[in-house]
Length: 499
Image (tube, rainbow, N blue to C red; front, side, top):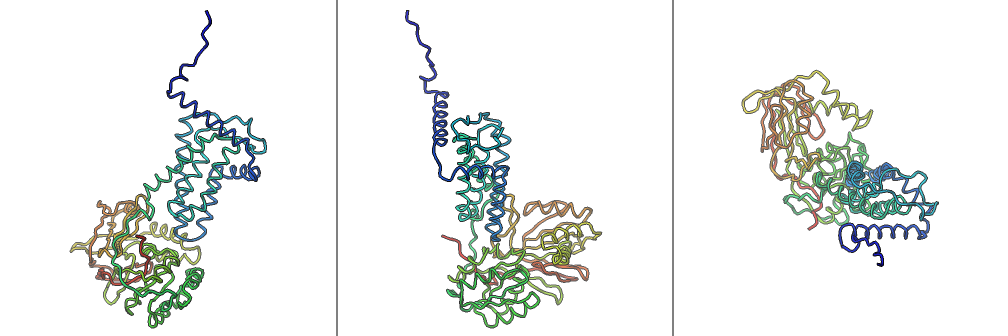
């Protein structure tokens, strides 16, 4: 009897292992094809590029370069890219590498000049380098298409280098890239990008269109480091009048500018913008805000992040009406575009101002917070609705502040007619109470803190000399403090969203 040859019956059945083997065969053939192909310029570049991405160092350097452009969008893109990279790396190292224990490719087909001097010792599937590259590039692109297009070729080259140097099969790289892109989208689910947020139907208003800038008088606070943005604005609007003065002269120069301007422009931080808004209201002229300070909350919440946004709005006459907050205490009165507060926060602002000229704004803010929270303070005593309350902090926002996913609070509607009032009650351990309030939701109520949204608020029984902070400035109030809103009082230029 003729012996029957051994037959692998599983190969005749289109089952799971047959399909897997065919895919692995294709994977190996592509790997060998890459190894056999001559890549002009690849030998000196791709191995070095692959090594530079070890431990994410390449992406940290790239993020620093992106953030160095000093635009809010670029900083957000760099931050989102790094957050996506962190999530991808954690997922790959804790789940991916341990789930599929695939051996690294044999290096026989790979020319020695391409091979890495130090071979990785972890399992092959999926590629952590490809995951990090895809996560960073996708995260950047979700926040800024321009920066994403700039980073994408670098990310693709890193992913290719892992096959080129022989440390990964192509499927390892594809799976890693898919996981990395998924991590970036997961981060976006936690912290939405700005284009995901629906802009409210702000009351649009007709405003003068200034194609070449004629009629605009832009006053810049040189102390806020604005000359670069002012020059960019001058190039785009050659007929605009640009005036630069030291911070001490800003009010005087804004008054002069408003008297002759069709549109009053200001470049500086929130305190400077507050002064300009008050003068624009008195002179009944529209306001054009170019962010140029350490804190630019009003401009950014408005939707103006740089000179390109403002130039487009001015050239096309795009503007909106926004609410203005007002405070009155005896003969003392003023406006606020962002926030107004009593209690510990005004003391923090004063401490920050005292130290900022020595160590810079952000370190001064941290130091000021530590000094204020460690000092022996007594709670502010104020009367609300006929009852006296000890308070560590009373905060009133001009418009409702929202928390976006895990992101800090910001406003999306500057004409909602509401004061967003947050109160941190007095008692022991002010630092604990303030931190609890900072992490609480928009309308959390507890024994330590509470929140309400109202059109006006009156605080009685305020001790003489009590500090009140408004848009980063500090003044003294006493007895009765009234906070209210002027609905849609100020016309401000901002680019209208597409569509």
